[in-house]
Every structure is written in C-alpha cells, then in structure tokens.
Image (cartoon, rainbow, N blue to C red; front, side):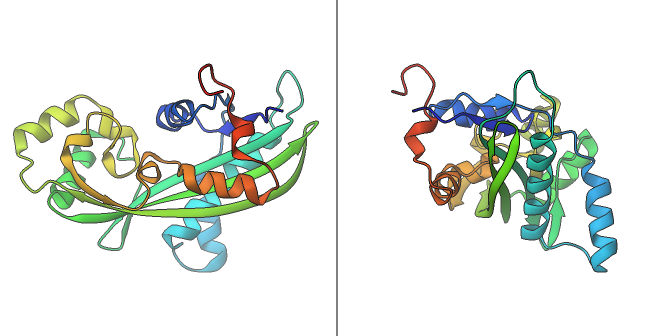
Length: 218
C-alpha cells in the first residue's frame, strides 16, 4: 500500500531529491512569515536561537501551516516541513537574496569549512486531521575550494543560483565543483536528509518503501 507524502516546501532542490529517491510528493506552499516567527520567538526567549532550534522551529511551522491548508481533498498520509541554514564562524546564514550579499559570503567561506543544519518535521495526517508528529535536525560540514578565483565567483553569482539557497551554494547543481568535501549525509546539504526522513517515517510506524510512487521505483 502506497503512503502519500506531502511536502510543505517550494524548494526545487528538495523536490528533485525526493523524486530521485522514487517519491513524487504533493507540494503545498506553507506561506509562513519566517522572519516574524523567528523575531517573536527570540523576543519570547530573550536570546538568539541556536541553529538547531531555528531550523526545527521553521520546519515545524511550515508543516503545521501546510496541515491546515485548504486543498481539493483532505490530506491523508505524511506531511513534511523542512528548513536549512548555514553557519560559519558562529554566524547563521540563510538565503542571501542579492548578488552583493552572495559575494560577501563567498569571500568569507572559500577555502574554509562551515556547517549546514537541516530541520525536519513530519506529521501524520488522516482525512485532513493532524495526528502524531516528530522532528529531527541533520548536520553536515562543508569545505569549499581554496582556489576559487574572482572570475569563477563572478560567473557563479551571475547565474542567480546562489541568491536563493541557504549559504549561497549548492552541491547538486552549478555550485558542486566549488565544494571539496562533505562530512555527513550529502542530502542534508541539499536541504533534506533522506536518511533522517527515513528514520522519522519508521518512527511513526511506516515503512520507507511505501513512499515509492514514481515510475521505475517499484
């Protein structure tokens, strides 16, 4: 029996990752005001959020927002929310959004090692009603090439790719040649750790193969 997976994300990288793993998820835009949620939470606790806390908070918020979304039919299956940040020198970096910000980050990180945190929140849903939920954070260390020159960096930024990904880099597209090593699960760096998701699925009492629903996966 196939289990439907709903993905509370608009990330093309997360979608491609799941498809490559044999899963065609139903996409839901969670529409979460991330900046506001983080600001309110930090104000409530009186301090900045640690990376692990931050990504799990946002992953959970996205999943819960998607669980209440109005679709053509009630949700039944598993609903996944995710979020990622990159940390270098104790500073948390999300998406740079501008070319200037992307260049500044790359000038700091080339030739160095930083840490990518990916949060996951999985909710069991039946007939539109949320049930059990579980979360986890995956961590991977990323080392960047030390011989990346300004011409290569300019060309990479000009593609627009690093503007809209955490840490201003990818390992599954144009940024891959600028990464020299990864310690940890590589899919964590893409934004969704497949081994972590598998553990969460099994923790809720389901088997990973029941999520396979793409042609060629069975």
